[in-house]
Length: 398
Image 1 (tube, rainbow, N blue to C red):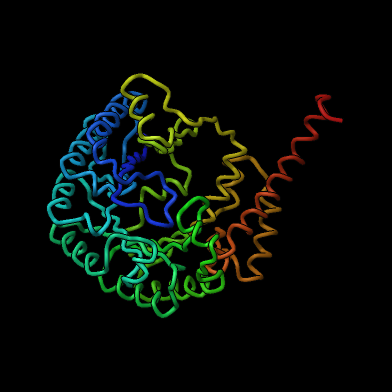
Image 2 (cartoon, helix red, strand yellow):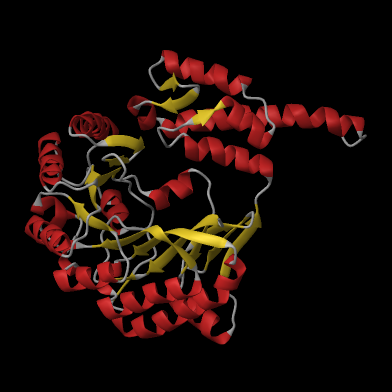
């Protein structure tokens, strides 16, 4: 049995840029799609020999909006992945889509080509909220897209929702969650709106627009966690909920520190102990791949100690959390200071220990950046404390 590997394919095209989006995506570039397909398939061909001996058990096609790439190009891309890589029979193959471009013909074509999981960008059931961030669809198109997915025999459906949208209230958020549940998805991703620098939404806020504040978002989040739990969706990550057996296997690779390779402008990889990313520029990426130019934007080897920090940062995003001897065994570092801090979190209702594993509670997830940051400071202090005596013994520190 080969080691397992994830593959991410970035489709940078979209019909329009949503006001909150800071992903690398490009409207009005349909004319570049064929050349991009040529470039990314060439990239797959060139990279595949480096992955010999690895079995691909997850493929994730993200964007942008992959559903605007067209069924013919998508099928061609998926065939190339299967041709070049050792894709397992039970591989999870996910494709993102937006409701306005996910019709039955497209969904049937990609399902026959191997896609067995659809991630649909619903975001809200309230048309006014969708318009407020310049989404192109309305809720009726969401229901039609879900019906089309079921007719195309897509059996693993995930819906994306956003809380904290302009004009959103607790009542309208509850309406969106209930509408999503009525569509009976297998998975839900529910994200708090973040105002990213340089986005259109950032400009609106700078000009004085008021959004739901942190306390309002917290209330929406805690209500949603409890409601989804009652509906049979177990929380397994800060923003992700699934019926039994339907967790996103690909996204779990990121949170569990497992290897994956990415393709496309702005795509990231973590493979062979090295983390690297490609240029966030479609034209430079295409020219680099097809003409032999540079496409790597950043590349670094990740030391074992740094992996220890990632273990804390990523695992504590999940309900699987962290475990003392797993940490000691993998990173040869002292867990005691971290356990003391986690016990403090437990007293404050932010963390819980179950079956020897520590994980954050929903209340802890709300302040996870601060909690994890404090743990990383403790870890760094412990690393320095262990390193200084060795340096002194070698005469390298005073």
